[in-house]
Length: 439
Ligand SMILES: CSCCC(=O)C(=O)O
Ligand SMILES: [Fe+2]
Ligand code: NI
Image (cartoon, rainbow, N blue to C red; front, side):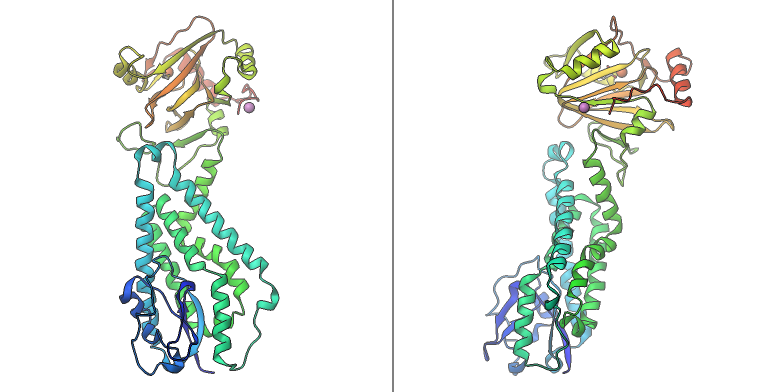
């Protein structure tokens, strides 16, 4: 039987007004896209498509997120040329992809406050990608071998439609790819995502159109389901790498990253593009130690007591960093953000709110350490550092000290300061003295 593929989409199954046969259409945004998407025969099944372009009555509003590229065999004589099909569907897909990316951006950029303290868009991206990727694999896994259709020689068309209908109901991987696009658009560079997704669709569409007849017999449905997560990720390699790095970041005990070079507001995160997280062992290598404690019960916390006893931190005070409680608030913040060292360790335990401790690494790059409730960090004597509030604009810190507290900052440059020299020496030596319980 002569066949050519048509794109179909789950919500767009309706019935031939003449014969009552199920008809599958390619969705688009609005009539134009639909028409381009080769739907001259919509409204009538190919067999009854004597009259043309009776398109719209049967068709409700389109979902803009429905670029499914399921494939169905239809008698070729009733179909427009392949070039039109390809161009039309690509146009619709490109439009939907761009829309998705825009939606993703809006989703991300809503409240600046959330964006910096809680990267919702990025977590959502990771979650969605994981979810759809895994679901696709699971679907493939669950698909019984009997569903893999045996080659059928020109059976009645009605059967093929019915079978395709079943297939369509079962899977909506186009929708999945759109959701993933929205999510990636939220988390990543919009141009990269848009071009990656469009390229991905172009290749998938070409394969679908050209190999439509083969796919229509869904010999490789199982394969397609396995291939989807890989393929989509492949075409979005860069964003995927970023999402993986985001996953890494989300799972970190304490978040730290290399800073960009921009002079924007210090209270913004100042991530590099792409983000570069710094693992705790790298922090440990430059002598920065970290513990996660229960800040809610800091007065009775046995873990805190143990650290204080072991390290001799007999002095303690609380610093509530807000304009009402701190004298010379603005000036103090300015001083905190001026690069400096101390002759002693700087020990800070975050009880509420959050803020950024920036420290220089061995190559003199800034590492930004995001300290939140429950984070206790120790900066070694002699390390260049500074502190700023983040977008939440509030932090309550416990300050600890061995003996009488001395907070004197020595602003950079301090290459001849004994504490600096000692610190440099300790960096070049084996850092074996690190307490192992720090994490
Ligand atoms: C607000 S505590 C951190 C600021 C700092 O580096 C310091 O106090 O020396
Ligand atoms: Fe300091
Ligand atoms: Ni612990």
